[in-house]
Length: 235
Ligand SMILES: [Zn+2]
Image 1 (spheres, rainbow, N blue to C red):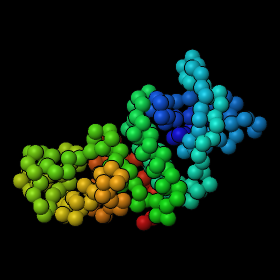
Image 2 (cartoon, rainbow, N blue to C red):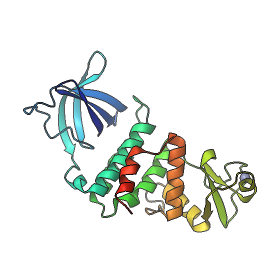
Image 3 (spheres, rainbow, N blue to C red):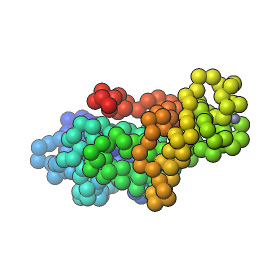
Image 4 (tube, rainbow, N blue to C red):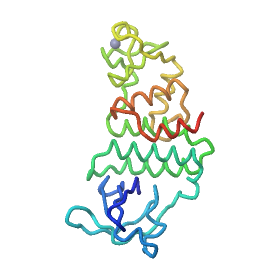
């Protein structure tokens, strides 16, 4: 799947791909910017292709690309495009090159297909983000306080993004100004984190969605750039 592309010289483009067999990798397509390139229309954002490549001196060189799925026509809708951009940016930012992550490949292709068909695509982002953190081993512990390890009591917990999880009232006293999460938000986070078919939740409460944004920003060390475009589209 094509995560992004950038120009190289007069006629070539470098693409960052996320592949089933090798995870993330960069590959160059030669002559792609000429009007008669045989790649025309295939090497587009989040298109899924069967690539044939050979190893060049420094980069893989794309020899051929057979189109498998193209969400392009459905992604011209601005909110869908913005959400797909966040999805691609997070995969690109969190995944190391040349590390096969088949579970994340499935998450990515499933997310793009869902976004392409969704009437309210931004609702899909919290679960996607939390599942991604989970698969990367970065998911917040949702049963215990991230600071002291005690089981979280029913009622209320506090988001402690700096520690990568939730804090109980005792630890919250020492780390002030943490956003509060009610029972339903904590329960919602647990349900969002579950794999499909295990009573998973699809939609996040506003507090749970905000908590996931904070955790992503904490692990990424910044906010995803594409989130700003999504924000500019309004609620
Ligand atoms: Zn604690």
